Length: 112
Length: 111
Image (cartoon, rainbow over all chains, first blue to last red; front, side, top):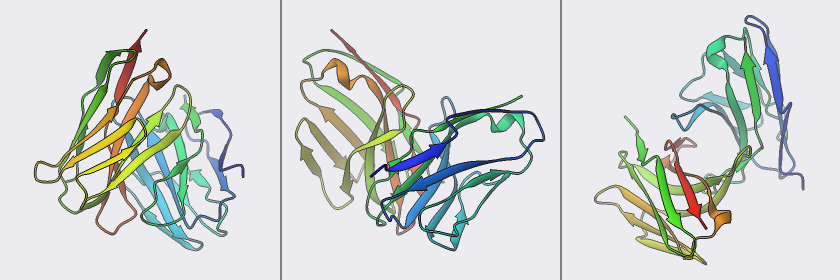
């Protein structure tokens, strides 16, 4: 099993550009989430999904869209990048509500 | 609202025990988790405890939960240099999928 795979690992965007951060898991996990990590702020939940076709907003959803057309994939779309979206983004998945998350290795995004 | 607090930094000598503390505010928390993050990596789940338990032990790790004071701690016995990392506690709110993370504690292990 590859676990949770995130691509790309690094990305630089110009303000106003759009892009999609990819996340895939091969563990048949139902639950998937996107977090952003900023210095001194821990991890904050952006969007999450409890199964294919079902998504919901987390704490900081503005400026981001998600979809979950398959169990394996949970892409995160930045609609119009802003410098405030400079962060490290983590995708995570888990099998059941009780379980802890398995995290990907992250995407470091810089918006200039 | 929900809030999870941790001290920012802890320094210990190799071979000593480390105790990392966490306080949370939401009384509906059902599961509490400890994660470890090494530089440049994602978060690795270390252990978790259900809210009706007081203690859980897993090899060198001991988790203590004081539900009355909403206080969670992680004790690492015989701390090694490889334990140097940032440690996050997180609470799961009720029956939701939402995890609220603390800001992380940087553990530095001196040889």
